[in-house]
Amino acid sequence: MKLLKFIKPWSMYSPGDIAGFEEDRATAIVKTGAAELHEDSDDEPTGEEAPQPDHAALEGGGEAKPAGRKAK
Image 1 (cartoon, one colour):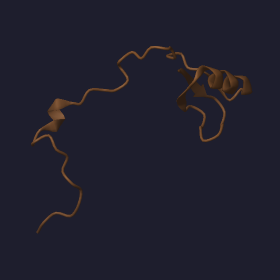
Image 2 (cartoon, helix red, strand yellow; image 1 turned 30 degrees about the vertical axis):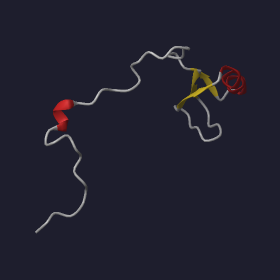
Image 3 (cartoon, rainbow, N blue to C red; image 1 turned 135 degrees about the vertical axis):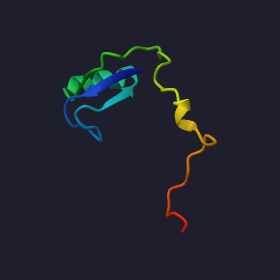
Image 4 (tube, rainbow, N blue to C red; image 1 turned 60 degrees about the vertical axis):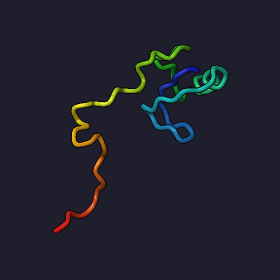
């Protein structure tokens, strides 16, 4: 998997978007000039993609409260 950073609009992507593609597809997109290889692109995930939850923000039972009108 290769990460590309789009520098021109292409399909549903806008400049600045980052997306992953199989190597052959990534190479073809780069050749169009619409994207460049993203600097963090490599074949192994780093394990840092998903941020850990802020446990201090989960006070009050750890569940999100539903949005809506306040009871009178």
